[in-house]
Image 1 (cartoon, rainbow, N blue to C red):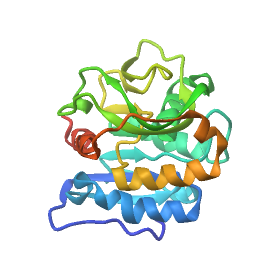
Image 2: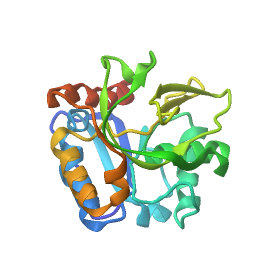
Image 3: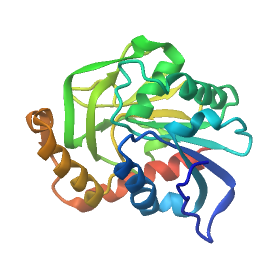
Image 4: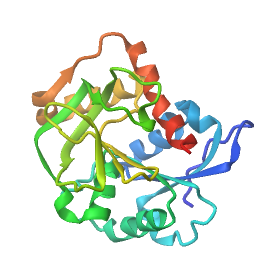
Amino acid sequence: MDSEVPYISYQQDVKRVLLIINCIICTTEQTYFGEKILPDIEAFRKHRYEITHLDNISGLKDFTKFTHLLISGSELSAAVTNKYDSELYRIIEYFLENKKSILGICYGHQMLAKTILGSYACQKAQTPEFGWRKVHIESNALFKGISMPIFAHSHFDEVVNLNEDFSVIASTENCPCQAFQYKNLPVWGIQFHPEMTFKHGSRMFEKNLHDYQSVRDNYLDELGNPEDLFQNQQIFENFINYK
């Protein structure tokens, strides 16, 4: 594993051990994800997890102790080939073959679809999405306890061309596949960012709105009460405890 130290509390459940692949390229944001965002998620204060970065995944060979895989978002585009692709495919394929739990977020969602279906499963989005946006969700175990959600969105790419093995379980007007479940397995991809609390999401949007005209052109804020975001973290509890 790399130098990032996982947050493990005295409440940890050693029956579940998560491998978290931090796909963020910017060093400052890599660190912020591991040291600030993950410890703010209640589910990760109760379960053991280990973090590694894309730069280090080629050294990962033994996954037997891990019960769950979480793949984060990234500045990378999944709609093009990247140097990390083959190693990321290798890890995802192991978890799929062994019917272990997987949750891909944003870039991770797109790479999960590409691993299963090939490159045609991801493309540049006709309308990029940024900001706090409402999402229509279907009844699914991943969304237990969540109603009429608003999530943080930040993506230029989208998942497309899914086959009958996938159930689309969330959508927005501009992005028909906001989330999927693969077969009846504990394998999900989500385009939005439930890990983003109001504090962390506001930090991300402030920076991106300052840096990118494309973000300013496509930004939408449908969030009324920041407390509406608290339910979003239930996704991680549902993912970890799915039976």
